[in-house]
Amino acid sequence: MLRLIFSLLLCWLPLSAIEHIKQYEIFTKQYQENDTLFLISRRFELSGVTFYLTTNTQTLQTKVRSLDPLKLMPLDENFSKTPFAKQLSAATSTYIKGGATQGITANDKAIYLSMDLCPSSKKGYESDFIEKLTKQNGKTPIAIALSSAWKEHHPKEFEALVKNPLLEITWINHTHTHFYDPKLPERKNFMLHQNTDTKTEILGLEKTLLEEGITPSVFFRFPGLVADEKLMRELRETYFLIPLGANAWIAKNEPIQKGSIILIHGNKNEPQGIAMMEKKLPEVLKTYRFKPIQEAFVQ
Ligand SMILES: [Zn+2]
Image (cartoon, rainbow, N blue to C red; front, top):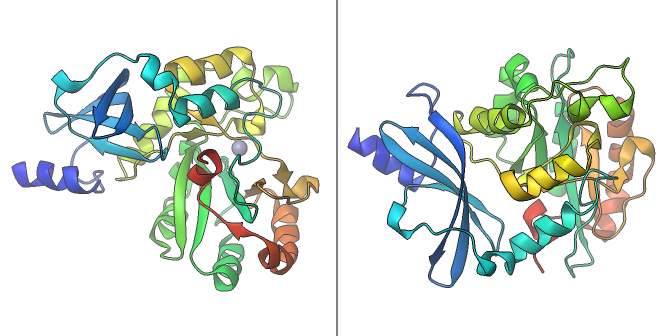
């Protein structure tokens, strides 16, 4: 048991075969380590040990850690001054496009690839595209927006993505169920549906990832990129997640520009976007480089 806990501290291992996470909850504190302020946003129990989901407020990298509770302090004005708090506040300031649509970095070659895995009845995923992409680009940073509902029906596909050594994946929260009803107008659809339980949608997906040994990132993508002011406020004040929109939704023919957050679908529901991306790829790679999504938000 001690050995298991010790190894968890070093590296977040797959847990599904071992034990389930208990009492997963919102828990907001900060702590200082050397020169860096860390945000704590969740707390849970595993094998009788308390773990915390932490975010480095400078690099936006997340990590699961076991910490001395006496060192955890309430958020104060030092937190508001961090790059993370500033980016969180900027990205949640308007709901129109579902969050941040491009990077703020000075690197004028950087672009950011994101791929959504909304629930789908289609078998497989866009594996041919991933193969072509990594053949041309080598190891590729990609932000994958996952819904638990897709993973549940695509366990093998999920595993293939996780184990692909040529992908450097940042896992984005795309909600637990990703509700969508084609008959409803947008203002009553997706997370704006009256029965949406925001907490279950957000924490549910995080638990899904953690139970696979994967640390959730600090990013969120609204299903359909549809949000409102209230949801944005909740992301900012309760969940501490940066919403990711996109300014280059490929299937909608939006051009890739400097700093673009690119959106494609990996669930086979939008093959035209994949075909267009494949066609563009050689030209895009002459000018731009795919970068990890965290780098879009640190200068
Ligand atoms: Zn979606």
